[in-house]
Length: 556
Image (cartoon, rainbow, N blue to C red; front, side):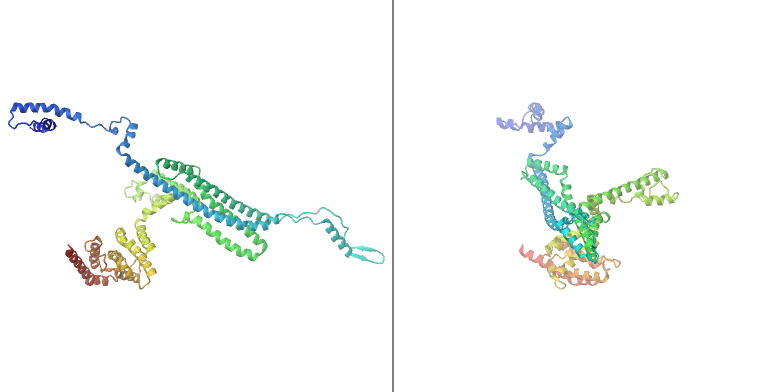
């Protein structure tokens, strides 16, 4: 029956409509059988006639054919949009890279020009000390000796004698330049050459960057390919390293100049030399500290080409030490353990086949040797990623506070109320403390409350809950500071704000926060706030909600 019904239904389609014939309801069984039988072949032929063409990715026989057919799953417009987005990202990166290099080179050229001018003025006065004084005139020398002989005559009755030796004209000996003069000029001329070399290389790099940007307007597919080709060329020919070496070359020039200056001062005047050495020493200590600190401190921002090079060298040493400790620990486990697996060390010896009681010394040694953290072996970017993962919530809180303190716009705090719901209690307290300090510094001690009344109160009710959770043992929050912060957060709440609507998530969050604050009475100072909320704020909030609903009812 179902097949016959389907056949009848199919049979009443276009064929009957075209001929104008209609099936009689009292047709005989034979007729029905005939129609049913004649409809069966049509049902078998029609799917073959309307069979869709199989896609290329389905008919592909090899992986290469399938890979070529995969792009047919997307339209040409979708692929074009994807490539345009990719090209825009590469263009933005390329433009920012070239602009940053150009600005850095411009700054270096200004410094190199000023430094070379100062250096030349010193060199002009000191290079003369390298050449000896010109030979004196022999006539003048002879006259001086004759005058000395005449003045030394002794006249007696028997004879006339001179106390001076006989003058003999000989070759004049040229005195050699002092050693300190030679060293001083060597340092200063090396400094001048280094600064001029930095300026010369910087000019060449600017020419390279100008040629790099020629013909790269737009984001077409062909232009994007050309841009990527030139980016690859910049990387392959180490242009980044050359640009990074320019400030190092100027620092070398400055160091050579200061060294020569100290040599000059120590040969002229001791007091002046002591003063100059003191200030040069301060600069040297500061420069060396900024190079070393990124290697020994956690994420120090004093990054420069020398400090990065030192960081990489020390990281290789840390990595070697890490591998040595791990291999030694593995060897000890292989000697005193059934599996020699390090994983149980990470699990705290709970599932270990190794028995600590049987080998207490080996146990202590393995605990001491086992590298529990490979943080020091990471590259700089990897270390930054690890730090972000470790301090996710604290960074989010600082980001919220920075967004507000940068603009000092209360509209930012409307978004901050939503952001703080994802922070921990401690990070919320820190964020509120930064906001409160910025408000006091910006508007003053007496006037910082009034601008906060335009912010939705749920921002400050969340701060109240976070402050109420602070324990008395918290070193960052003394009892007096905590009470003052609680009072400030409560005074920031303004229930008469126009932003207080009865059907918004912020208002619902405010009501829930108020209920929780009333129930929780642990922190000193929060008890009075809870009473005020219970007696005053809840009543105001209820009146405001009823008033708002009444206005909306009249409106509807």
